[in-house]
Amino acid sequence: MRLYLDTSAIVPLLMGEPSTTACRRLWDEADLVAVSAVGHVEATAALARAARSGRVDEEEFAAARAELERRWSTVAVVPADRARLARASDLAGRHRLRGFDAVHCAAALAVADDDLLAASGDQELLAAWRAEGLAVVDTSR
Image 1 (cartoon, rainbow, N blue to C red):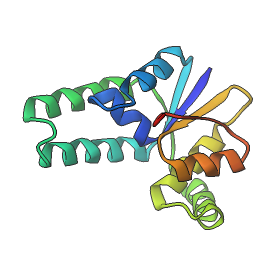
Image 2 (spheres, rainbow, N blue to C red):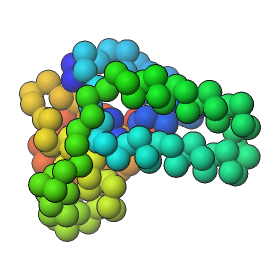
Image 3 (cartoon, helix red, strand yellow):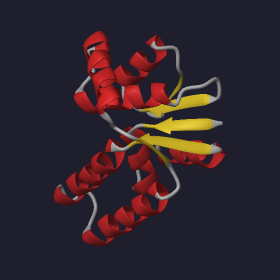
């Protein structure tokens, strides 16, 4: 299976979340994991927010960042180039998506084939992917 992850499916790989077990299972079963280039920034920002709020301490923050780097070194990064961002803008308008969700939507569509499963816990993004014909998994359930 080829797997596309948005940031809501990456962060549970890095720190304890209700969907950690499901996200790890998907990761382990995938032959290839693809993520938009913006995923690294979003994941780092989510970890920083968790540290800032006291949800994780500095040691946990450092460990999560190290795990992000380890996992990131193995993913197929989908570039956020001009054409992909233009497509993301179209998708944002069509599906009423937030900015980075539209970028993830366009990135998953760019690598889509019959074997791709797109994973997210974001209901709006999942709905957009479904409308665009992708197979999806809701990591929030």
